Image (cartoon, rainbow, N blue to C red; front, side):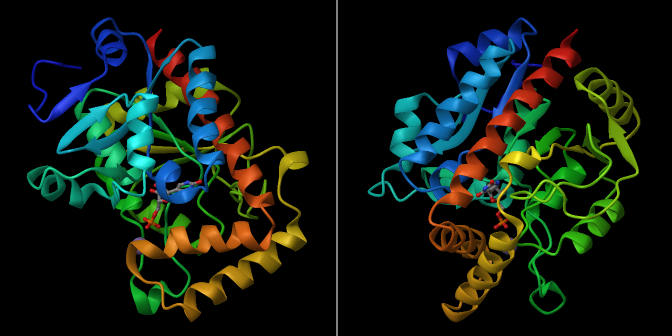
Length: 307
Ligand code: PSU
Ligand code: MN
């Protein structure tokens, strides 16, 4: 991890800079989930709760985003507030968008793909999110597959997520992760999590019993492969969304996205927002608890990696 070779467009918060220089474990967080994935005011609560959960385990949170043409690793609450300001109009930035956005001095929120690309450049090995992006339903015609997958295939980062979003084609996404050489490890489970649901109904080849085993597997993996790793941490069954409500909401949200003609990067935010409306906010509460749990697990793995 070299702070010396950072591009001049990077600004690290003092806390993150200190941590990286002194091998204090750091966990990257994305800003798209806050700006485009969750409604106000819960989005601010989630951001704060994730940072608290990471600190509680002895790691340092580094929320990533672009502010006026600077890459910020370790956004302050005020900076994140700027990104959430509708007046700022922060774009949703995947990995491919960042160079152009920097050239135009823009502000924007980074997706998982964007976040791991930048975090890895700064020497951060672990990231937490809610649900990874993946292959959308109907992708055989639309070709809509999240750049999160390809970014994970070329970035040596361990991402902790509750599987992939259940709005996706989960089976196809697992196949793509296989093709791309990205290992999927169940965290204390042998079944792939289903984002709002504890179990998506797919058996996993590998499972770990805690942070030490996860860190050990990632250490060996990165020694022989350039790809990242997905650590799949399910929401506790007693906290999941009611499965019947989930299935109804899913149908309604996908129908809604089709009716309004959503395409490209607008699809995921529109489907998640409609999911929240249909479930009267229940999906937001579930999303909130799973992402905070993922942040805590990511921090524990970062601590294990640094010891
Ligand atoms: N996890 C969540 N909510 C979200 C996301 C992840 O619980 O909104 C975001 C992440 O930024 C992820 C993005 O990278 O959704 C995927 O978007 P797309 O399908 O357009 O690649
Ligand atoms: Mn897409």
